[in-house]
Each structure stands twice: as structure tokens, then as C-alpha cells.
Image (cartoon, rainbow, N blue to C red; front, side, top):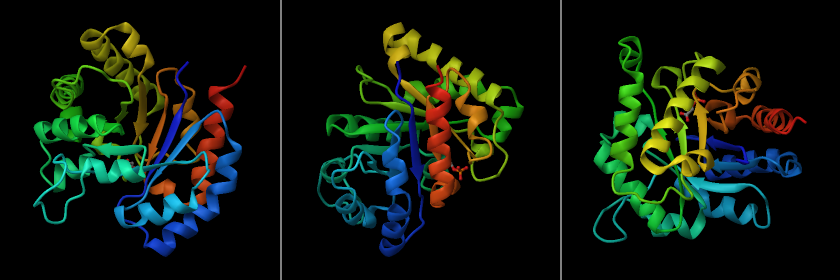
Length: 254
Ligand code: PGA
């Protein structure tokens, strides 16, 4: 029922020329897969040229952030309207932004709201730190992040959640498939409590954190996991293609 989504978060990597090369290296293979949605999220400066290269493609484009005001005197910022002009998706509340750029739950909420109003599909990232995990407070932390991020959001249509345990991001130490499935099941249950069972069954929840071609199958075999937000491995064409191909095989196995 839920179409899987594999999204590549390129973070602060690739010049425009490198971004175009990377898209060229994976475009044809990704386009062969029609039962998994694929999205790539390059840096802002590459969005327009990559959009041009992807004209007519099934590969979706996403930004990695936006600012919540529509326009005005906010030097250096990019608004939801500007992103919506080029992209279908936008990553919001990534743990690196929460950590290095002081994004609070309130800021994340304003960004999610602005994205939805602009017709964008936000990929809302939530995840617990290592200390929180070890203290046994994962569920409490996630429930709080979810309710702060979605405060006053009444309709989740278009929204994707990415569960990204902070301790698994860029560390080469992913969660296990079972762990991620259990936590994502908890997230879905929290959404059901706030938005009803139908919304909870419809929303896609991805896993993110050290996903690569060697462990993708373990995650995609889990019923609650609807895809992945891939960082490092999305910068290697073969890795990303393999993750998408494995997802297609596993999720559509008869
Ligand atoms: P990683 O990053 O795959 O490099 O761990 C994932 C992310 O931060 O979205």
C-alpha cells in the first residue's frame, strides 16, 4: 500500500559539476525501477542544474533544508517558495541541523508548516542520541520530537518521517533491522494516537543511519520500514542503485 521511498541526502558534498556527474552515473539505472520512489537531495546550488538534467525523469528532487519565512531580509536563507519552485521534497530537522545550527523543535515545526503550505513534501527527521538511547528514553524522546515538530499540523498528507538514530548516522554502526522496525512501529503507533489509524497506515516512515548496499536488505525486509534516507552511500552511484534495486526486489516479492 505504501510506495517505498529511497532518498539520498548528499549533505555538504559535491560541486555543481560533481553533482551533475553523479546524477548522470545513476540516472538510467534508477529510472528502470518503477515500483520504488527515488529522490536525491543535493546542495542548494546544484538544485537548478540537476532539475534541468532530470527533466522528464522519475527521479525526484529534494532540498536539505529551508527557512520558514516566505521572503524578506534573511541574508543567506532559502524559503519554502524558492524550494518549491525546484523540488518536490525537502528534508527538515536533520540531526546535524539540530546539533550544529541549533534547530529546536519549534523551529522544526515552523519549517514543516512552511513546507506543507508551499506544497512541498517534507521528510521530517527524528532520532535519539546515544545517551538517550542508553538511558532507555528513546520512545519518550521520539514522542516529544514528533509532537513538537507536528504541533498544529492537522493533515499529514505529503509528509514522510525518517527515523534516524543519531548514534547510527555516519558512524558505520547502523541499528539492526529489528531494532529499527520496533522503533518505527512505535512511531506509527504515536501517529495513530494523534492522527488516527488511517493516517498512521498511510504515512511512510523511513530508516536512516549508515544504510549501504550490504545492509539495505536487512532494513527493507522489515514490514514497518518504508524505505531509507541514505547519506554517505548515496554519494556512490553503484551503492545507491543497489539499495534501490534491493528495495524493489524485497518490497515487491510475491
Ligand atoms: P549516513 O547518513 O547514511 O551517512 O549515516 C544518513 C543521514 O544523515 O541522513
